[in-house]
Structures are given as C-alpha cells and as structure tokens.
Amino acid sequence: MKLAILNLGSQYTHVIWRTCRDLGVEAVIHQPDAGADVVDFFDAYILSGGPASAPDMKPNQAHRLLKATGSGASKKPILGICMGHQLMAHVLGGKVDKGSSAEYGVSEIVVDDASSILEGMPPKFQAWVSHFDEVKKMPDGFRSLAHSDTCKVEAMVHEKLPLFGVQFHPEVWHTQGGEKILENFCNVLKKE
Image (tube, rainbow, N blue to C red; front, side, top):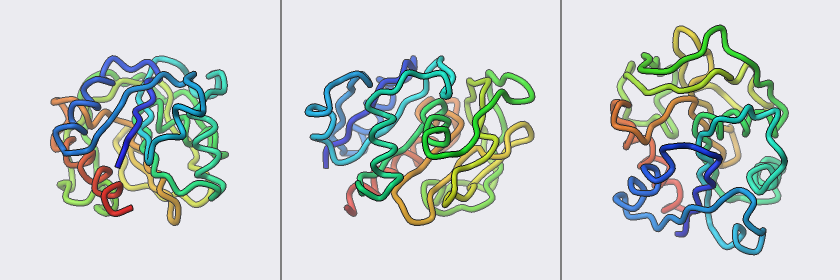
C-alpha cells in the first residue's frame, strides 16, 4: 500500500510521514502542484494542514483527488488534517469559515462517536490545535465524530466513501493518542 502525503504547507508534514513509516506504511511527501501522473500512482492520501484558508486556495491535486473520491469515481482513502480537513469540507460542498476564536495550543476534544478513525480513543482527550477557520457545515453524506467547546466538527467521516477529516493535529506529541488515529487510517489502507 503506497500513501502520498500532500504537503499543503504544514510545519508537521514530516512528522506525519515518520509516524506512517513507523506504522509500516510506505509514505512519500509531494507538493500539491505535482503532476497527476505522479500523484495518481498512490493508493491513498493524507492532506496536511497549512496556513492558507481553504476557500482561498488555488485549485491543485488535492482538489482533484477530493472531487474524484467525493463523486465515487475513485475509492482511494483520503485523510484531511486541519486545513486538509477544511479543504475536504469546502471542495465537497460544505461550509468553512472563521471560528469564534483562533485556536493555537491544546484543546479538549470530546468524542461523540468512537468509531472509524476515532476507534479506541478515550471519550475525551487533549489535542494540539492550530487554526482560525473551521468546518461550519459538513458536506452531504458526512457525520461528525467529535467536537470541542469552540468547534462543533473536530472530526468527521463520510458514511459510504473513504473520506476522513480531523480539525486538530494527530501527528504531534501534544495530542494524546494521536498516533492511534493515524494507525486507524493506515489500517483502512491495509484492508483495501
């Protein structure tokens, strides 16, 4: 199983790569403007965080991949992290906008549905957040898995398609059990 991490500008992209490698999944980092001939070679994708606002982002390979999986034309799993999560919502018809307050630091995440990528996570856990925008309305077909005091969609999953998103950063050590979330995504890949 080959995994591409599209680096949307996150300072933590290499941490995602290292964690996936430690979990036994071969991962390669690519920029989102890489050619489709390069990007389409992979079986699954992680969209990293980044400093941009999803609605303002110039269309790139991440947009194309999300549209393909969102339409059912592709069955390749995609995990969006922070801005990647917001981009997923935006591209697939949800609403992304400024949160009530910018979040930078540790936040308490409350798990509402301990399935999918949150399987095995405790009912509440501390997570590293670094964002101003958030998903205000999920696209059709998605359900929320977790929330916090300041953000109602901290994690989401599509009901039928292999699309997953988390508002926080599971890849950094500040997030309790974050590796478990990446492991759950990698386990999806191993079953494909």
